[in-house]
Image (cartoon, rainbow over all chains, first blue to last red; front, side):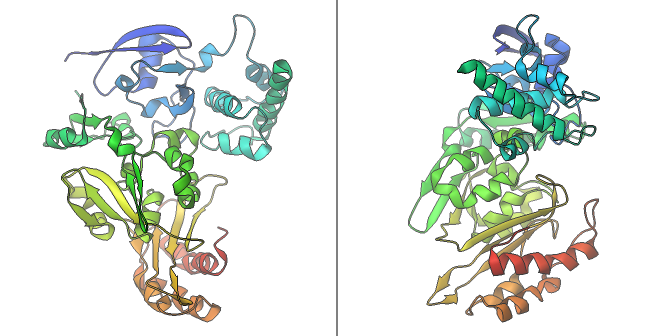
Length: 160
Length: 266
């Protein structure tokens, strides 16, 4: 069976791959491209750990048909750091123990990045809503919410 | 092996449907089936037809394109009354993907958006130009061959539309039940009110006895008490991992009373 060529931008890098019919974006990113930062969790849209940004909006890569992302921009946790410098969200998550087992972290980070791009000064309720599709079974969410709020404050400081 | 076929228009996609084919909109239902290897199809048919994203507002009706996502609903000024419904579904990522049309095919206990559309006198419009009442549609949806192109609903005024979703997890969880009520008032009396529940049957279903109890009366405590007392005649809810049939039967009247009395705070 012929594969389908798909071209997209992954973390600002032009990417061209051939995908199997019906392949989901998560499988393509992990197995074909080699970006292991988004994780496979439930495969049914419940856990959110496969969350990536497509044209800036959070989507579930395990439920996204790979061949529908042609000419779109995809961002994953793998593109957050700037060389050796972690993204503020990553650093604050680390410093404040917002990651425990770490499995939900890629999805949490991308959901938070989308929120802060849209709303640089979120209230606590905004953060809760933004990560409401991401399940964490370790932290009880509070350290994650605090970390996102602190990262937002830090990022606002940088801008000003 | 799965093949994916993309068409320019909904009509072309409809023509391409047939044996071993399924239609995919946002992907939240079809892709999960694929991920679990439970598919009975070999072909995925899809379209980027922009007409599926249209919203047409008329004096007393609104037509919603089947391809509108929950996020599209949240961003549409004319659909402010549906914002609480869209917001109750999934997290932001799901809402960027899940469509209105797809929601009509979501299996129990999902499909809360359809509950609201059913209460709002939803009429399902198909690619071939035909139309079907939502109750009839739900009765036949599993064998439905035509593609849904849009849904026409009543345009509520003021606060005569109400919706609430009851789940065990905050802020987001799967429905123990969801409910919607459209309560038009003429000359101080309820005129043909419509009430629908989700997760109380295999598909969203109207509470016909409660509707009849309220029709022509005021929305007072006595009328509400009578109406909520009829729910066990309309529903024999299913058991699932979220709630037993007994539990749903016990709590549904409580939540409907709150919805009717003060807009609902589930």
